[in-house]
Length: 255
Image (tube, rainbow, N blue to C red; front, side, top):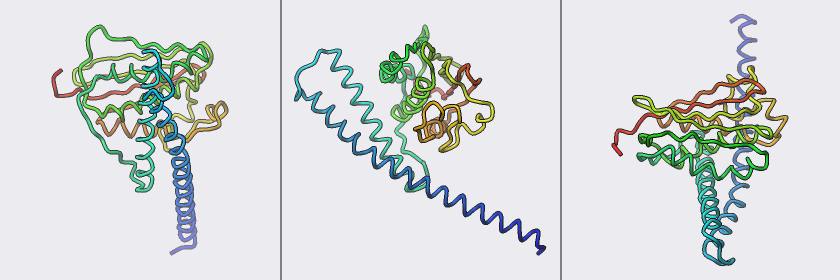
């Protein structure tokens, strides 16, 4: 073996060891964060329970509806957190899926209220262009597919500026449904686009706006969509906004 080849092997071994150490550090960091989050989320869960049980007084129907939606969101986050802990421990990132014929219009409409307050604080308008006819069903795990759109909506609101717009559209194809979620926010720089679905990746322009963040949202979204035999892609231009397109196969079960 030549000295040159030996040098290359040594460099590759060093790089591999560095990658292993970096992956271990990220895994330990994620484990720490998820365990720290579980305690306050559990506290929030019991606060919601006290409110819904009437321990702190009565509410109007509108107030109760808002509290119930907040409780449901918190439960979803607790379940996701537990699955992330297990997946991170196993290094598999394979979640359990309980699929059923579902109405995507209803699923997304139920998610929107979670973001209305943060959107209003920035005068961001969230629009859903409802189709004229009822959508055909898709076979999905409602909780998991909700996480996809929660992540996309959270990013859209977080990285949009005052007065921007977020728009949701539905398109029915012969054997699938496409849902587009478009914003007029920061957009994704060209040099970051190929990495946007990578685990822990965050583009420089969003890190300048929001320093906190795990870089797991879009990685998780892609994982979930593909587990549903669907696809996710995006079109984006820096400072002009981003549109994500999620396509899911139609259910074989009739309405």
